[in-house]
Image (cartoon, chains in turn green, cyan):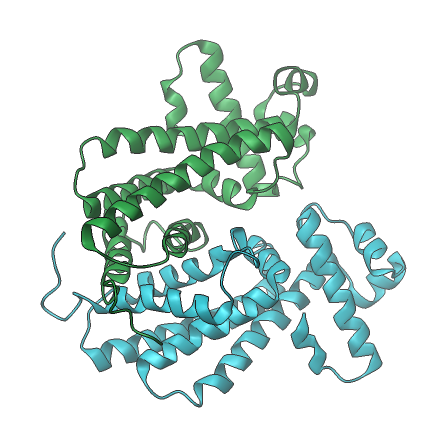
Length: 207
Length: 207
């Protein structure tokens, strides 16, 4: 989890390490299948210490999710500052997502799998960050539509794009497949041409 | 699991019922988190009976996966018999996948999650059925490329398409979103225009 390296104190570094171990455990055993005992074994922390600092398995998953989504959103905001063209802004979104994804594949698999595992307060906070991320993408889509005078279902377009990108965790092989920037270009091509062509207002083909 | 309805004997019907209950349990608790005891409770079968007929949790997951993929592939073959145009054949593939998917959402979530849970013989047999399905789609892509004189990375295209379609299990809301045929049209539009436009041999835009 490279992003955690921004932390400063020795305790912060230790926390980052423990989250990395927790990702490994959730990745190997699944969130439901993993126990605090497994987490204690993997992190080298006593069971009592684990409960003392992290309270529960749920809170560990929450910390992993919060860190991941906050990092992705933060990086995206930085990068979007330098991109002005609507098409370019969507490409920045795709590249930012895929770069983080491919550098943190285990975390992304855990997050994709445990999408709805968090309940109540934890779940609501993570859902809010994800909603912000989704709406950022929806806004980019709307800018693009307005600039090009296009007409398409933004919700289906955004969710199709997320699907294309997130499904990668099931098939990506570093030795076979291209790196993040080439993949971002190929997926960006398929996606952008897909929403562009033939979708001009009033000319939508009836199928 | 509507497909199971083709079965004939009373025992077959009972088997289909038990697989449905098992899907529910895996859906609620995750495969790793579910125990044979949970499955016994949900199916109303004794624990001894469950072990006698199904041997293990793994074999239940195997039966669910085999049934699902065999049904999808079988229906696809039937439908492709009536479709001759390369574009139409890809649209048939998309519609067939989405129709099954949306009628069996819990099963599809379980299968997406437990993609790599089966080991050894069970895993190999399922992997072979899935490979056949993947290659069918790859062949459709190649027919389409040849017919249109296009140039694109078929692997990325097929896997992007699977991602668009399979990710649905994370967001689809029957009351908000369109039915399978409308969704198949929208996703088909995005995908087919995406692989079509600007991808003519020799004219590929450098990005």
